[in-house]
Length: 332
Image (cartoon, rainbow, N blue to C red; front, side, top):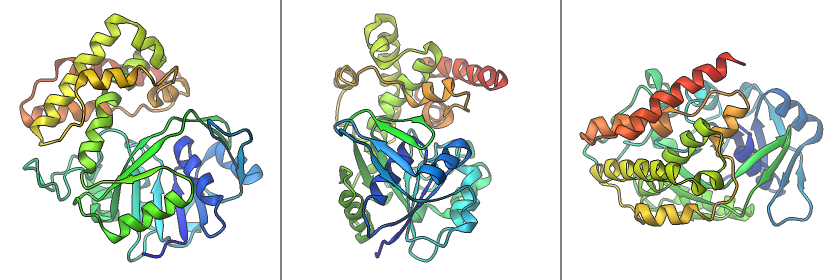
């Protein structure tokens, strides 16, 4: 797989950070799809990325547009969109694809392609309309093009075109089939060459659920309370709720054949070291944006029903955060 042209589709906090790192290498032809004031600032000033251990920011110029039709077909597409934003971008992403183009999808929670070539759950090729209305992503992009990606990287747009990373993060890539393919190796090499910490895996689903254990708990609870991670960890009542959600995630994952690398107690202990971070859902709430509810909360409830595993705490959180989202958007 030859990778020269790379488009970051959705160059917000995390997508923009990856675009900046890739564009810092002269042999990469990098473009971004963005919108609004962020797009205007990228066009005028380029992208600025300040990493946690860097004295000065990395500043780069990239081709930036809000219309993917103006871009040529790409060797590689990396999506920085959240799960609820992807369906409306299906046609735009599809227009960037040529024979052999792979699409790295950086997603929290359960992705639309999850059951493609899934050999463990007994639900191979199952599709969920909640994640992919009308099957547009499945039909126009195709799950066979996807490289799954789990990101452990805090990022925030501090002002248009300027991004900060809260720590030195890492990314895990994997084929839905579990194959350690030539494409997977090539993409991993390009991203590693740009200075990103990359691991490849034969079991991307277990990586998805490992992060999902935290996302399904901390994201909605932080939005409902407006609390930072440190505030949640310091409150015994909130910590009890986090623990209960994590146990529900573990039970549903077990029913789907997921291999968890740590216990709920170990996951809670790991979370104590994250620091005073605003979760992505809290950032969206403060920004008046639609919340990423279905992949992070709704799918846990849906998969609980599929597997006959009770998820009472998550069902309550889903009802509350859904109403919060309605009221927040109505106020904006």
